[in-house]
Figure 1 (cartoon, one colour):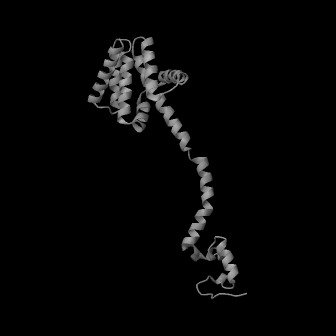
Figure 2: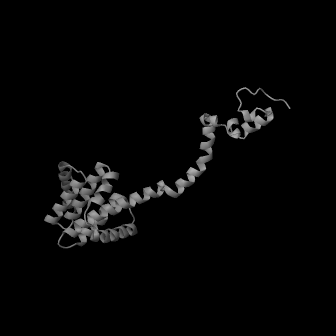
Length: 208
């Protein structure tokens, strides 16, 4: 069997024949890896081989410890829907009495914002009413919006809040204070806040 020059080969492989060395190469392992040479650690082929071996293990760990992006997106969307619904419910609750007009305006605003079915809207509103009862502040709701909503979307939320406030034909001082506070937490400017109020008032006047 023909042998090749031992120059450049690890000592453990200098007795190998050409077919044997070719078999090692075909197996995807560099010569030094099969020989156990310490110099193999600096070989690009060796690094590639180790990376390939660890890749399935890394993927398995990701499945257990890393959240699924698709599910995370769904959870984020639901959190934003609930946050928006809670703020609209708070406008209703800040009035002396919750009217049917305010409730209808809340459902209409959520339908416009999220394009939900009637059943989904009913479940969302019920969940928002339960959540609002135990909410100590608004920061956890507005912070989610600040992270996920564009400025235009946040302005739209403020306008929806005004629509709920104007729905019964009477603007309560508590409603005005609440919407002003939420607009500040959403980093909506005073000019944007006033424009949203005027748009909502004009829409209410057209409906009446």
